[in-house]
Length: 160
Image (cartoon, rainbow, N blue to C red; front, side):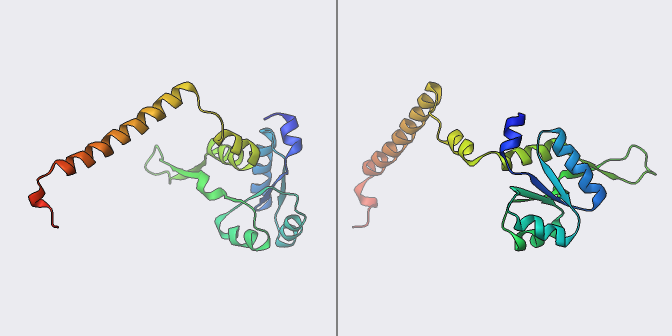
């Protein structure tokens, strides 16, 4: 992400305990995203009411709290922690943070709506057009074949 894109978008609000919030904010900053950490409910309320943030990152227990203050997209940080299998039997299992998946989710939610719409509304390539036409013709042939096979069935089976 370029610094121009980073400056044009709203920052991300991170609502976690101070230690965890600093870690997430630094990870976001390293990857070109502007982010701010808050750790108390009054700070959260003030931040969300300022209308400065494009989305929030928090834990599952606080998602409803964030959405009740302001309806913005919220990322549940807990879904990016995965259990890792210990190598020794005496070591309890621990969790590992999947930062790549987290950053992909951030990218998906911070991408501008116009860029997403443009990606969906783009002109199909020649190869895509040929494949779509072949699929449409195949469906048409199947429907015609079914219709003709029904007409070819004996009239004795019909209930008039």
